[in-house]
Length: 73
Image (tube, rainbow, N blue to C red; front, side):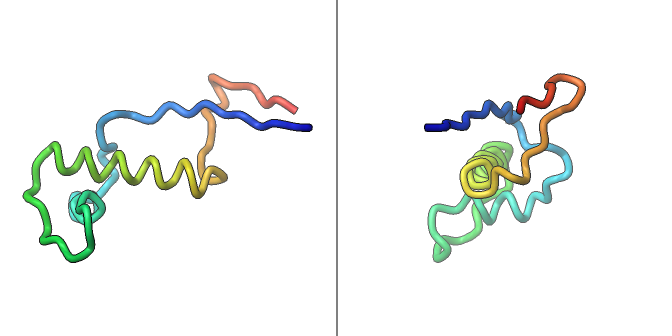
């Protein structure tokens, strides 16, 4: 049997390249909910959901920092 494990460090704060409108849209609980107020907390909620979604469903898009991690084969 072979098991793959990974450790990813994700910032708690949204990176500056994320557009506020996208983070607010993702922070909603349902698509039928109105757009939330633009606050740091709603942007952070949107970022948390984005990071979780990408880490879980699209881990191939995560790239380790080559200065910090060596390649393990």
